[in-house]
Length: 120
Length: 422
Image (cartoon, rainbow over all chains, first blue to last red; front, top):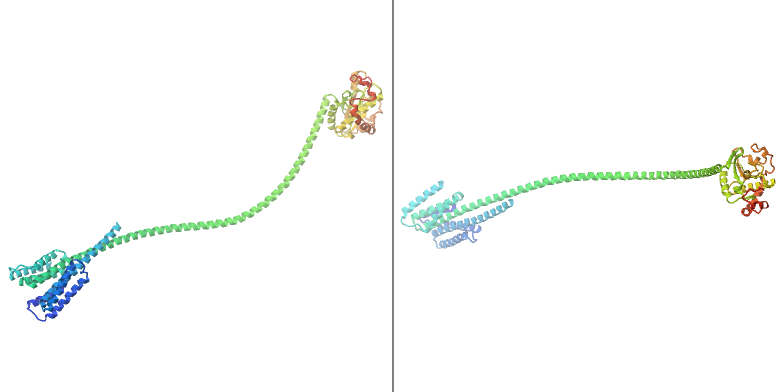
């Protein structure tokens, strides 16, 4: 998120400062971060059916669109798409984590309840 | 709080900027959604539980508002709004995730508390069990000690019993020996007592028999005395039996009924003290003197034989015929003659046992009643005794019922009357 923030600031500066050349290096950075976020979401189980899966799909689609734009030389648009894809990937990861935390909490509560019933 | 104020200030600046930039253009759908989602996240626990994510969302929204102010419909405006919307929702999701984590931790704590409680209870139960166990073990130990003590006691008792049995056996054997000795001694004593008893019994029987015999003799004497036919004289006890009781007239055989009378006399004689008994035959003065002498001799002999048959020893009896020489009364009357016809049995007193021996010389005897002349008819015991004894015995059966003797014939006609010839 902080990275996104920094990138956003840089992007914002580029936009404000007009079209700066040498965007190749910058787009590669965006690409790397987005792909890392998608991988993290996948590793967290976001591919399972549910809301996390929806945002993971959106992230992948936007990543693919961004790659097309990069090939077309439209790095500026591609950077924005990559940022959007990264936001979806991070939301997908958060949802996947929430799902796991909810399941864990429920299981823990069930166990505790079962144990407490043994006491009574 | 400070963050919230600055956010509010930034939003206000953005809104102002937007209004200034393009006052008339409506915000794109992405920005509207981003604003709503951000507000919702801000109202949630994200500020508390996911403050960083919420700040990122605010910054993204500020950029979107900036872009919107600059160019309402630009791709940049929609892009930043899209990102802000995702960031706001992410902040909300992160807050819920943290809350789930808290729930889970609370559940784990409850679980651990329950576990601790269970452990405590288990511990309590275990300690109770341990206490119980140690108590039971203590009791068991006590029981074992008692058991061991009892076992030891039993063993020592067993040893005592064994030694006691040995001693008992020895004692028993010793007692058996003593008992056998005692039994032998008792048997000897018993035998001695038996012999003593037998001796006593036979002595007693002898004594009683003698006493009975004496009693019988004394009774007989007493009866004779009561009948008046016994009298005491200087020469001894004189038993007088009338001739009519013993013999038929003129006969010398005993009549059957006379035997009863003589049996009493025999009993009396048996009780007489040691000494010789003299049997004297007497006659009256009727008839020739020598015939009377012979008859009286035969009759005395007859009585002697009978008494010998009754058990008198022969050498203790002497028979003497006195004829008519010693009358008791006058021969003038019939009563006097009847008194003179008799047999006298003289029992010697103690000290007068020499009488029979000296009876041969009546003259020498001071107790001779009459001073009449000494009679030669007193026969010597040796000669006449033997012959009459031998002769009358075979004669007796025939003589008794029918006297065939010559001198007896005349008196047969008048047996009851006083025979003149006698």
